[in-house]
Structures are given as C-alpha cells and as structure tokens.
Amino acid sequence: MGEITLPAYVQYLQKENSYPHPASAVSLVQTHISFVLLAGEYVYKWKKPVDFGFLNFSTLEKRKYYCEQEIVLNRRLCPDIYEELVTLTADGDSFALNGDGEPVEYGIRMTRMPEQQMMGNVMARGELTRAHLDAIVSQLVPFYEAAVGGDTVKEFGKADSVAVNVLENFEQTESFVDQGAITKAQYDAIIQYSKEFLGHEDRFQTRIDLGKIRDCHGDLHSANICLTDPVCIFDCIEFNERFRYTDVAADVAFLAMDLDFHGETELSDYFVEHYVAQSGDTGLLKMLNFYKCYRSYVRAKIALFTASDPAVDEKNTAACVAQAKTHFLLAEKYATA
View 1 (cartoon, rainbow, N blue to C red):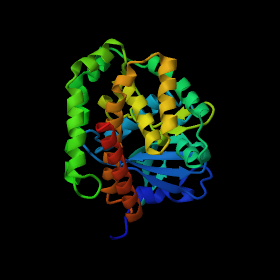
View 2: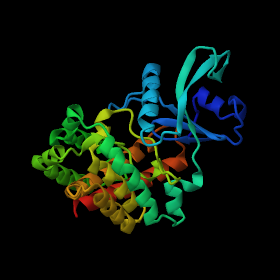
View 3: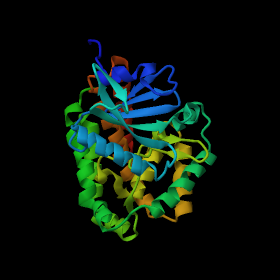
C-alpha cells in the first residue's frame, strides 16, 4: 500500500502557523465524510467531497450549506460548542483561514471538549456510572418533547419510510458479504428479521399516533457525547433529513446498542429503563430490538465505508474492518433474539 496523499488544504491545516491562535501539536482525525483538525483549544471540521447517494457533499456550495445546517442543528443540544462557519481561502500558492481570497473550502470551528470526559474514554477507564446516564436522559427527554414533530416529520415514521433506510443498508453492503466482515448466513438472517418486523405496519402507526416521530439527533452514540456538566451531545445528522426524522426509539436504541457493543449491557438496560421512566414512553420497548439491530448494522456499514477510503491508512483500515465484524455479530444477535 502506497503512502496516503492528503489534500493540499489538509496538509496546510496540519501546520501550527496556519491558525490565528496557539495550535501546538495539531492532529488529524478522519471519518468517511470528514477531516477533523484538533488545533489548540479549537476543533476545525471539514467535509470530504463525497457522494454516497444518501449523503452528497460533492460541490463547494453543498459543503457550505451542510456546514451551516450542522451548526444550527447541533446548537439544539450543544449551544456553546458550535462557534462559527469558517472559510479557507486561496492565498497565492497557499491558503488562509478566513482570508480575503477566493473561498476554496468551508468548515466549522468548534470549542474543543475535554478528551478525558468523552464518553468513550470514560467507558474505556471503567468509570461510566448510572449518574452519567441519568444526566444524558435529563438532556434527551426535554429535547425530544421540544423537537419538531409535525406532518412532514411524521411521514418518516411509517413502515415503508423506515424500510427505505433499512433496506438501503443491505444494498450498500451486499458487495462486502463473505469478504471478511459479514457472512452470507448473517446477512440473510438480519434481512429476514428486518423485513418481517417491517411487515407489522400497525406497530409503526402506533408510534406515529403517539407523537413519537420527531426531528431527532440521528447519530446518538458514545463517540458523540462528552460527559461535561451539562452533558454535551454533538454531531447530529445534518446531511439527510430522513435519518434525523425518526422514532425517538431509534435514537434511544442507538445509544443502548452502543453500550452493548462496549460490553456495558447492565448500563444499557438501565439507560433504557431510566429513559422510559422519565419520559413515560413504555411503547418504545416494543421497537427497541428492531432499532438496535438497524443501528448496529449502520455502524458496521460506516466502518466498512471508512475502511474503503483510500485516504485512510492500513492500521485504521484493519481496525475499521474488525469493528464492522463485531457490529455485524451484534446485529445478528438482535435479529435472532
């Protein structure tokens, strides 16, 4: 495997003197859709020019629009973290942040959250407690109550609308079957379970009638939670409304599944029980396993997409494939429960 060549602007942003503030030891984190630069007390996030169908950042105009959307939507749960839209401009043969030249990229500047309090790191140290989950629930219950849930949003709660997202996952991962992360038997079992559940249209209609389809977070897992006081839940889905307009059960199931994935099954059960107790949403329990399966499969798919990105190095590629394999096993477990 040859050396990875990063875009010129990302190479520029890896230099400390590219920033108007102290930025010692700049580090780069990549996802399948973003370049994230950790620079001093700030984080700069830039969208990759990718088009996955369900997500389209292929033009500069689209990247600017979705940066603006990301700021507005994330301020709902994280009002103080998302600071502003930033522009990367041409400056002769180089670039400048918020310069006077022609804009070549748009990004987001965020306040950097404390690494040691990121939920994943707290879990890794074995320090996650029920009190942390209580704090998350106390943020989520009023968030969902206040979230938009009108006629446009409700449509996305119907079984055929949910099926679009669920079945799309299977289409997008078919080429990965029997390539090391998922077997044909697992793939078939998960599809069979998902289609059978989607056939019960009345379950989905009941959730609509109860007003449980809302403009949610859409990506509620530990990597997007910082256990500060108050808790900061960040990085919601901004690029496609059909992933965000969903049953609150799908959001809750995402974090519950992620806790299962990290071996915190007792805390996963507690989180769900406490959420149901605080919200009064007992009907969520009937949908939980289905949405856990769906969310686990989504995480596996994302890991495979990241592993397939030529800009990602060999070590991270292997880690992503291993993560996908575990998520597929978990999805199969929910499907056969």
